[in-house]
Length: 178
Image (cartoon, rainbow, N blue to C red; front, top):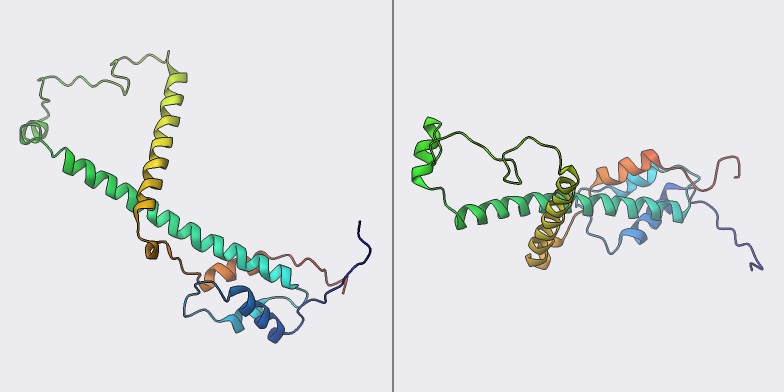
């Protein structure tokens, strides 16, 4: 049960909003070009410290997701490079593939189940195969990321991360409530 209601006023001046932003971001890796003063001026006068905290959290998430996307791309490139190193192209296959001939002399191509048929009987199995492939890719990416040194996991929050969230922010206290 709540015995008291505590009212904290919104951060009505840019200076107060900037102080709250500094406090909320003091342990984060901010891009050196971030202008907290500009960000504080863009925030509405009815934002609370919790609203500012929400903007900081979402901006942090955007920056972290950007890093993860880049690392996923790196993981895919690393996986391809590993496969190419393990299974270099056969000179005979590359010579024949240029002329359109395969090693067996025909152009038969099997589907991914190896049946060579166009039947849709095993569509449910295909979905399971897709799920298995996605799981494998996820675990390969996770293993790649896990193998990286800690400093590669650092991400930088950029000004645009904040600006986008500020444009969508709906303060928890309305102008009417003030």
